[in-house]
Image 1: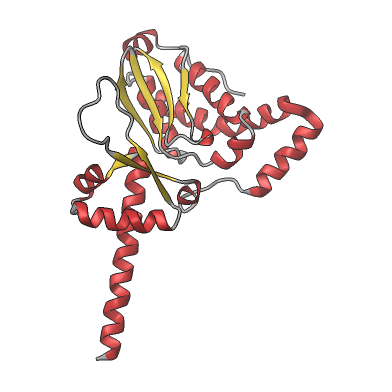
Image 2 (image 1 turned 120 degrees about the vertical axis):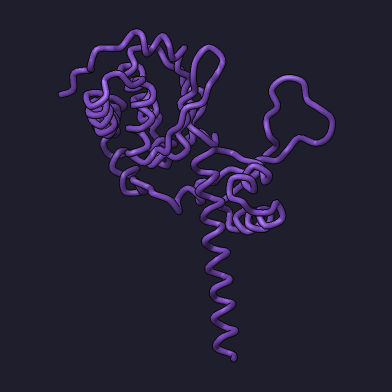
Length: 236
């Protein structure tokens, strides 16, 4: 009987860990979320979600802040949204570590910012090659959709959201966030790549490297990008 009880307790712990992982994954994919949004997405009760969020906050994997209100604020306290911390993101795929930061520091000491920029461009060359392959296979599809798919395949968990005068390209995870915190050249090179692939000016609104919950890039009216059909970039 004692062994059965121990097994039941262990299974309960495993279930809790699995559910916490689902909660963290949902925040990763959808961005900062309220407890009510998480409950609806995952099919759990608000009480269960709050319990798992409390556990994640205690582990420093999730933090909270007031939900930003655009326009006139209604009565009552604003909702609280939950977002992943750096420690929480580290539980998912992380392409770089302290060794990469040390290597780039050594490179910068010799070649300066330009040398770091070259490394960043080579890093994002993989996204470009994936994008070009997708576009060649489906030339009539929206370039913005293709870019989001290419980024997701490379670990950035990208999605598109409608925005005034255009769209927002949201990257809910950044495999190089720790490195980009110290080397903003990575974010700059990525933004320039987006502009070149889409044949349009784009504007970076937020980055995970700067403490935001999601990397957000504004893309001008989708119809402009789709009609323009930028020529395939040359890649060497």
